[in-house]
Length: 92
Image (tube, rainbow, N blue to C red; front, side, top):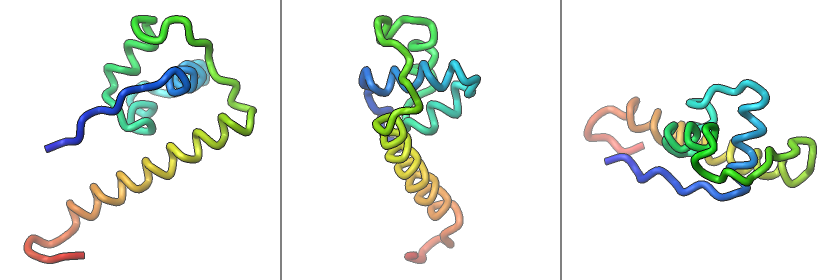
């Protein structure tokens, strides 16, 4: 069973808007944030977090937020690959 898509904060929405402005694909942003692509589409359309401005990606806070998200993404990908590559009945 897949884990539930996480709830996005205003800070996440600001990051989404900034990444969309840099022509990131919605599915890539959703993967980075660990959420459903539909949440990204809703932010892009202004249906959620409508008053949130795009994040300034040049700040230390934005860079730190992205670093945390990238680390979480890498761990999720590692777990998924390990599950796929692990021979049945063995423990890695």
